[in-house]
Length: 262
Ligand code: PAF
Image: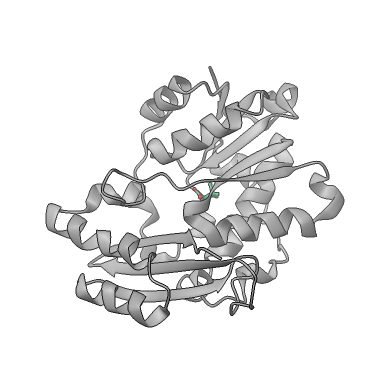
């Protein structure tokens, strides 16, 4: 496996399967790489802690960075290239003034809780797609709104990434049901039992009962909603729905979601 920092060195890998990450890889990320591997294309994994998607209070400096270990993990599941660009390579000039898809501004979920977040995500992902020029990209459904935002961004930009397909990879959970996240490492044993409230809430069929479960687990709820699975707006009769939750445990912010039975 090669580690590349310059955009030009990626030219031979155009047409790859691409997994964008911010590093701190865990089993959830490895499942995205395995999914990319199934396409039979060379797999490029990017590791870039994107300053544009952190709000000032979100502590960019404390974000865990361990390139060597991340490369070992990526290699262990068959990644062909790790692309680890510098901030200068990613943003040689001011970040693009990108037009945000509706799913990044209308649902009032992550977009309301982290108002500058999706602009930063879209700017980084657009730049990565321009550099890497993949034909397939894999995003985790754990960040369900992000997955929809990127799906819409690809569609909206038309010819820019004309043949690019997006795969949404299923959420990977620990045996107790907690969705894998780099933030789980910060949870104490007690907080971990509280955090299980998120997964339990996703089995409910009403927003009221979701809120009750989250509350019983001592979680500070940011949202607990049932929405249309495509638009993330109010559910429409007979259309697939998704339950989505975001809650805080002290400084730790956790999100989760699940498809609801029709
Ligand atoms: O999901 C992430 O890790 C990031 O938002 C992404 C897609 C790598 C963009 O920086």
